[in-house]
Image 1 (cartoon, rainbow, N blue to C red):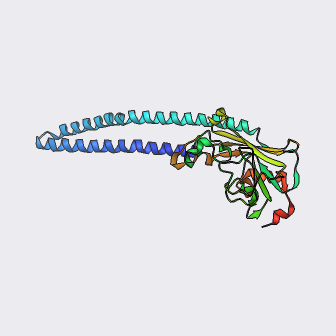
Image 2 (image 1 turned 60 degrees about the horizontal axis):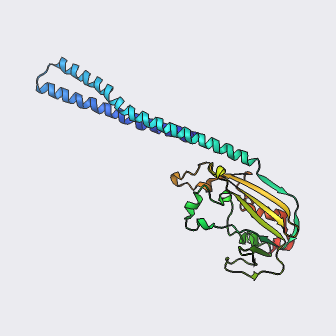
Length: 297
């Protein structure tokens, strides 16, 4: 931002001084031409023409610069005021994000080996109030439900647990529907394709998440999510992971920015394969796949 600011100031100075300099030069040249042609026509003595020309030059220097200076100075003051206001808002928002980051991270209380399938208590997707919005409108909304992992989760939420990197993962994924029924997917082919409805042996271990949509945080473009893994048989919380995201542009769409897609995160997530789809990666850490499944194509 500092580099951009310096370059912008340089551009403003060029745009300010260059037209004013050209205007002064043109005014002096025009007045000189008029005075000398007029003086020659009316046979005015050379000394008087020189004096008139000097007066015209002085007037051009005294009148034209202030004419440019007043609006340019006002514009510069307004620009600096806006920059300072935006900088202050950014620093406040960054401080809020840094404070929330103290709560971020993962806690694994117990892991489970040889898990064949899991249950998803929620499936990530568009909320009802987002259905009539475009993708760009949703991702530019400070209150977007899934903003915390907008640029982290890829692919279909259900399918991610069945296939990863071209390899079969869990044998099945159960999904708890809104009406309380359970849909079992063995090979995901779209939500309309259900392999088994209300299986007799629903998965014991479940995955869910809670989006942090606190208006006080969102007004600073800070979003959060907590992923939880639960033993449904004992109601035991096996593990939880909290991620916070911050949109440093504070929602700016200048030059085609896609606000939440430019978010930064804590814990810091680097550009590695395991950082993509952090929900799936975290679940695989806790609910370990049956060994034969890991290598099955």
